[in-house]
Image (cartoon, rainbow, N blue to C red):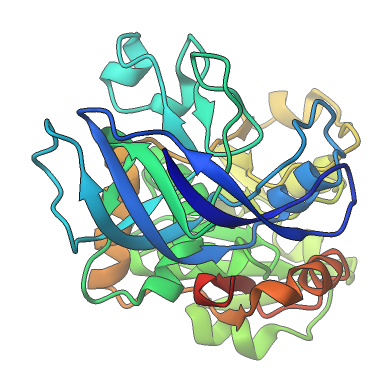
Length: 346
């Protein structure tokens, strides 16, 4: 077994403590990764605070993992010691169902094994990236291109693929008009991806305060949703609206901005249910949808695309002792736009 230092929460909302855990011995298809950076996702906070219920404690969060291969199992051929690699939201799946076979492991019918706050198929709890080392099956490891720093690559492994996947699934490209709701940890990446894919990009935010930043990320237009005129001005305009915020919206108002056959896709997840009138869908043959990250092949595609198009999250690198304060700042929307833990400080 491999002992490693981690940041662990003993119970919901408990302060993080530096402690040690044991990682499993390398199996033939396993990779031991020396973690360099681990991003903080809002999902980490929901989980560590047990806001979604069912939390497994003690908990080591983190599913935006970037590091270097330290050792490989006897059957590993795709990776070698010294390779720059990443691990995202999942570390195992059945590998046999229709979704796994088509590269959509996130929808595995057996139930995908999450990187942390989950149980593997032997019933053991999983521990995430707030850790010096992690052992992962090779098919859930991706290569990080040299053009991407490991620190900026880290948030791409959740926030990046969460926004890239729906844009690709709904065939966003030249000639398409896309609206991004929110300029936050997800939204600022969604803007960059949609722009690089060739779409005409509009940003919808509560106020005008982030207009200059949004334009810098690649937005063509920017509107404040706090202005009632916005919804009338943009009626029937968009092929796709990508909602990246975790607050409840006036769904009917946003649906009214879709063209016939347009789709409102949710990647933000508010705690309370949304409400809408079915007539908002019927009258324009519109769709209301959701999207859950992406599979391993698409995650690798996203990293390669980001490297090719100079797409990177805006990050604030922090030490391990600052994670508790970082959580408070995320809750208060006081970050531009993703925190990344320097694991060397653990």
